[in-house]
Each structure stands twice: as C-alpha cells, then as structure tokens.
Length: 334
Length: 292
Image (cartoon, rainbow over all chains, first blue to last red):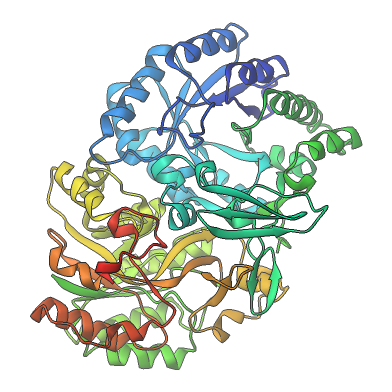
C-alpha cells in the first residue's frame, strides 16, 4: 500500500466474501456479527465468533485489516448484547470497531482503549465539529462521512480535523443522511437504527398481476412494473410515487454511487480511505468491485488518470438497476 | 406535564412566520423552539431575525430554545449556529457538531430528536456533556422511553414529539427542487409555495409521505392525545407547527392535560389522517384504534 493512496475498504457479508476482498486487493474488510448489532442484519449474512477469528487470521496474515461494524444503536434493556459484541471484536483481535452509539463509543474507549474506534456513517457526522467532538470525547481514529456532502464540503471537513476521513466510493446509494432516516420503521416497524435493516425482506411482497408486477413493503405499494420492465427490490426510497399528479422516482432512482471519475480529486483533498458498500452482496460482487477499485485507486495518483471503459463496464454489471451516479459529490445532482 | 412548540419545519413568508409567533406568545406552551432545522437556503428569517424574535418572545415568559439545523454541512451553517449559541440561551442540538458548539459557548443544550438516543448510557453521556433535556427519537415507543429512563443514572427532563407530521428523514437532495426539475442550488425557493410540504402518494393513490425540501415527513399526522393520560415521566409534549389549526391543536392538548377532557373536534384539525404506531411499538404508519 502506497503512503499517499487512500485505503480501500471492502464489504464482507461472509467468509468467502472476506477472502475475495483480501485476494483482490482490499486494504481492509469490514464485517459484522450475526445479530442486530450491525446495520446489515440480514438472514444468511454475517459472522459467528469463530468465523470472525478465521477471517481476521486470513486478513492479518496477509497484512490487511479487519474492521468490525457494530453500528446500530444499543436498545435499552439489551445494552449488554452490544457490549458483548465489542468485547468479542476486541478478543478476536479486530483492528477497529465501527460504532455510531455514543454510549458504545464511551464503553469501547474505557474497556478496550487499545482497540481503534471509527465513527460509523450511521453516526451522521457531516461537519468537522461533529468529527472533532467524537475525537475529543472518544478518541476516534477515523470517521466515515455520510453520502450527503459535495467534494468541497468533504475537503472542508478534512482541513479542519486530524481524524482520518473515510468516504464511500461505490455501492448502493442511500439518498438520505445515514442515521437520520426512519422511513423504514415508519412503514414496517424496523429501521437501521433499531434493527440494523432497511425495507426488511420479511415485509416485502412481490405480487405478479398477469405479466406485470407489484412490489409492496408491509402492504404499501412501492412500485408497479409493466411487462418487460425489470422489477427492483422495493427499498422504500427507490419506488415510484405520485406527487402533484406526476408519477416518478420522487426520492431516488434505483442506482449505485460510483466515484471512479472523482478518485484523483478524493486523493488530492486527502481522503484516507474509500469504502465500498455491499455486505449483503455475493462474494462475486465483492471480488469484482474490489479488483476494479484496486486498479483505479492505484492509477488515480497519475496525472494522466482516466476511467478505463473496462472498469466502468465491470461496475455497471453489478450496479443497482445498472445505473450509476456521483450522488452528492456532484453539485448538479437532482 | 407541559407543552412545547417545536421548530417550524416549513418555509413560510417572513410576515406569516412573525404573525404565527406573535400569536404563540399567548399559547399555553412552556417552551418555544425557534430556528431553521431543514435547509440553510431558507432565508426569509436570518439568524439575526430569529434572535430578535426570540428576545421578543422571551418577554412573554416562555423559554426560548434555538434549534440547530439537522444536517450541518457548510462553514456558513456552522457560523450561523455559533451566532445562535453565543446569544447565551439554550440550544437544541440535532447534530454532534452542535453539541461541541454549545459546549464552547458554555451553554446548556436540549438533545434533539435526531441525535439517536436509544439507551441509558447514551443518555447519561449527553447529561454529562451538558444536556438538560432530551427529546426521545421519533420511533421510540412508550416502553422504549421508559426503558431508557430506567437505565439512566442522572437527572434530565424528557420531551417527546407528540403531535405533528413526523420528520422521518433528511437528505443531501432537495426533493421539492427535484419535483420541479430544478437543482438544489437554484431551487427558486419552491418550498415557500407549499406551506405544509407536498403530499407524496403511492401509485394507488394512498397518501404516504410528504416532501419538504431535503426533509421527508409522514403524510399523516402523529397524534398522542389519547395516550397523554397514561404517560409517566414525560415532562414535555412537543406540538409541531402546521399552517392551519396549530392554536386549536395546542388548546386541545392543553385541555386534555388540565382537565382530562377532550375537545370533541380535535381530530378534524388533521384531515390527512392520524397515526400513533410508534408510541405503541408498531410501524409508525399504524393507528391503534382505541387510542385514536
């Protein structure tokens, strides 16, 4: 890893995905336990204590890091479960824990001072004062910025803090400020903050109507697809709705963030780490995206950098709705 | 138990805002939250105007609390907030940065509903950092709030969001500008034409959400008036302003608190429908019949 290149942080929803990330050039992988302590709490995903140890051994023996996401909010009366997750991450030798809950950051600092603490994107730190507060009180090493800032705003944060700044570079796009969205619990009773899920599959219905398809979330119609239209998962901010007699993607299209074209800019402003979203995706996705971003980051320091068509094609294949956007990085974003 | 008037989440012409708060001086609310929570581009009232309004309203004996924007992004967002903090009142922090600014100014803060306090240790942290009141997360049920309060170890006042359209999400994108095919930076201030936001319906015509600039709200109105009698350890009920009937709603809640009687017509003030699922541990969009 070059000193001036940002680290590439890749998602691992399973041991095979972790290995795929490490084998294809991730500097670090992030993962979570099989429970509500992490914000990708989906059936069939995530790690047992034993699997985490195996994963950490695999990554660290190759000089890579493992970051454990414990990034939901501890629910009153059950705080011990979250403390146990932090203890388990420390005992397993994780390089860092990624936390959002201030009570948990406080606990981690007091009980496991040697364990690096990262402020999760769910902690909603969108300005340097917020990042510095987390440094003042919890001694965080790094903060992950929500996907709501423009490049100049990211730069402004970096200039005003000594905390390492991590940003998202690729993956499914939250159009809302992370940690500031309870749309999912409004519709279903379960949200990222409380259950580690958004638009949970347990509440999803795919209802074929002849050759058309309705998708519903807890009975609420999220979208209707005509024959031949590919039907997307009913994430509730990515459906088509009616506002003022116009029916359109009123909040967000099914699309993925792709920051390939602004990588040199991210390097220039001093971003320390670039994160890929997708712990709920397959090991094949992890391999493809890791390989592509590794190549792009390695090339991004060169003044002649340009996005290679092959990279773009590889990422388009694994993008939501096969569409990509620069999201908030680009000011004209509508 | 007392009432509070939450921050105005919509964008109204300056005179309408001033008229609204001139009336509020006589309403039975203990605290009034002032300031722009949603969008820095909303400049009908600037920081100095909010401070002047606060000074004026304080004459009526109400406690004035200045609310921070929920998503603080730019340097100017932060400097506006510093001005509010340096006025020496109380700040409602909806962001960690706002807490740091309150601490630097040496003032107390109210931990706002967007700070994600879901457990006792987190609440204790805020108390130690200078919070004198907290507003429970919108999605917290009665049982959750009780559990958080039983876990905390220090004293603090408790407020809940009791009535109004629920502010469910904040974004980088402006959905109102998007609707009019305008960019966020050239939005023509369309929000000012929609005094209660814009309704978003499903493709089968069910009113679902409400877009309000970068904020997404519930289409329906959250209403806990029928739960008031059973509430314990709640010090303040927040009423969120709306373009019409805010005084009538406040009167209904005041009557409920003081006499345990109800104004028969309170439900008519929100014809878009009433929900209370969150408080009862269900999806927010649900309505528990016996409570509504």
